[in-house]
Length: 239
Ligand code: UDP
Image (cartoon, rainbow, N blue to C red; front, side, top):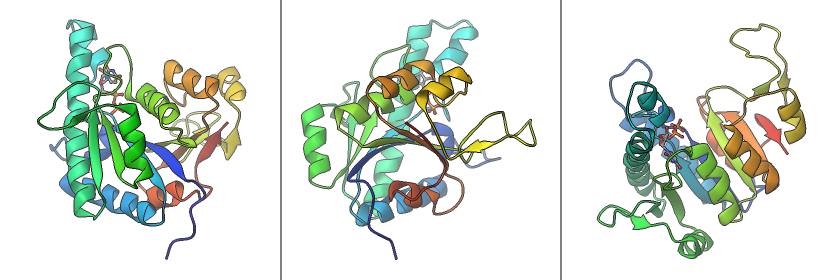
């Protein structure tokens, strides 16, 4: 049912919001997590090695809390802990979908997750286990997009795939401008010149400096996560 994958190893970034069901009070929807896990499992069965970074925005964002008076670094640690909850939910769903999966946390939390050890992560991936990188980079003032860019380089992933709620990069906000043009492919340089927001600037620069292509795609269309992971040309490729 699935064609041969174009990639050997990829890094998939899921936002925390991706795990929430619209209009529900739940921060994590078990049904949605199961659906995402099934799509990832399908690509995994086709032979793609997958590193996963999940955000925490469904629970908390450090920058938002700091605007409201909280110490920024502490607020960011809260945000990093939020990503661990998401990582555990995804791990459990992936295991249920039949995929062996390890969580490595950038903040030590040994009762629930391994600590991030780069060479161990690479060995797991070589042995076709999915590795979920939790707790971001372990440092405040960074984002999980930056974590994705960093871990992608550390594990030698061929691309960073950013699963979002839009189907690619446009020359204007498609929700505001009706004739906004979508790019199939665009260079890092043109993104910078046109001031198109693909990721935060730290994450974007890291990808650009390490020549890691970024693929932005819409994850809400059923089957899209599998398609993207298998290398079908969906979304926008920035390289
Ligand atoms: N965070 C951090 N350092 C990191 C990664 C994340 O401090 O390396 C914190 C930060 O407060 C951020 C929160 O964790 O707002 C959740 O991550 P993010 O906003 O990237 O999640 P997403 O928007 O992808 O759900």
